[in-house]
Each structure stands twice: as structure tokens, then as C-alpha cells.
Amino acid sequence: MPIPTPPATRVHDFTVVANEPVADGVYRLTIEAPRLAAAIRPGQFMSFAVPGDATQLIRIPVSYSAADAVSGTIDTYYAVVGDGTRRLSQMAPGSGSTVLGPGGNGWRIPEGTNRALVVAGGIGITPIVAAAAMLDEAGVAHDAVVGALTEGKICAIGELETNGCGEVRVTTDDGSAGTKGFVTTEVEPMLATGSYDLVLACGPEPMMRAVAKLAEAAGVVCQVSVERMMTCGFGACNTCNVETTSGMVGACTSGPVFDSGRMVW
Image (cartoon, rainbow, N blue to C red):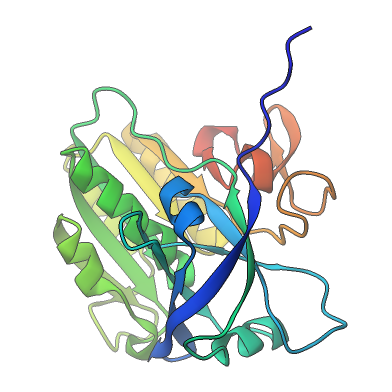
């Protein structure tokens, strides 16, 4: 009987390099964690132990936007939505704790991909920035659609451009920036051009479902990064289950990136 390959997920010490607000309720965090920075791949996630409340035992899972193996640093954008992320936002440069990672399976570029469309909704921008960098490194042309509730919640547009996005279209629910409406308002006509053979999407589940439906209708391969409470981060607790065409699977081990055709929405 073959010996199973041990998971790459490990606990790493980290030190905060920078942690500051960049949009309404959104922070950009840079940590130093050399071994994790060298191991993590686009679309994977990490889980932070945030100090400040001894009763809080659950780690906070977040995606990442950039990793630099040379400097040993990792960047992430995160939204302050509860006590855990509020305490994370209060971690000052020089403070530290532990982070679990790298977790899960990330984005994939199918053989023969010529042009991709990356789609972000809200804080789903985080793994999409990493996806754009991956496509740029692979020499795959790509464009982006970024959606948010309002202009004040938009961030990381400059990083998408730095990471090779040829065109970045913005939508807002209230019309305060870009096109008024959902991301589908821009995604649908872009896919109708027949220029794309891959879509990578992350955001609220209704958004990803709608984008996946448009991609399917256009005959374009689509991957989605799902959000679940990945309590343990390595497949032991069954709190992050996702229903797929092959049954219930853990987002932290089988995902968080899935082929959209596998999803039971």
C-alpha cells in the first residue's frame, strides 16, 4: 500500500509588515512568513490566528493577492466583517502570530488557453489579483471585470493593471463608478465577442453562479473560488462542505477553486 503524501499545510510564524485601510471597510495586509511565501500558489488560502481574544479559537481564512519568495512576504486584501477581522485590522507592524497554510487547490490554466477574463465581486478581488499575476507570468492575455457596491469599496485596480490586464472594466451597484449594475452587465457582452476561452471568478455566490451560467452559454471554461468558513483548514472538521456533482466535498481540501461545472448551485 503506497504511503500517502503528506499535505503541504503547515503552521508558520508571521510578522506584520504593513496593515492599513485601502477602501471602505477593506484593509491591505503584508506579512513576513518566508516559508509560506515560497510555498503558496495563486488561488490557495491561509488561516490566521488573531490575538486579542483568548476565547476565539477559530482561525480566520483569507485568500492572498501576492507572494514574494525573495522578500518572504505575502499580501492580502480583507474586509472587516466581524470581531476576528476587526482584531486583525488592529495588528500593527512588528506584531505577529501564526498562520496556517498553504491551504487547498488554486487556479489552473488549461492547456491551449489563449485569452482569459478574470471577474471579481467585492473582496473577491483578492485571489483575482493573484490570478492575473499567474496569467501574466504564463504569457496568457487577460482582461478584468471588477464589481463593488459603491466606488468607496473598490481597491486593487492598479495591481490588476500591473499584473498585465489589458482592459479593466468596473461596475458598481449604485453607478458611482464605472457601469451601473452587476458584473454580468459587462461580462455578458465581453464573452459574446468570442475572444475568451477561460473565466476565473471570485465573489458572492449569486454573482459566481451568474458568471458561470454566462460562461457555459458561451462555451468558455470557468473556474470559481468559493467562500466557506474553513474552520480547521485541512479537511478534518467538515464545516466548509460544498455540494458538487460528485457529492459533498471540503472547500479547504478540494477547493477553494472549483470548475464551475462541478458546482451544484
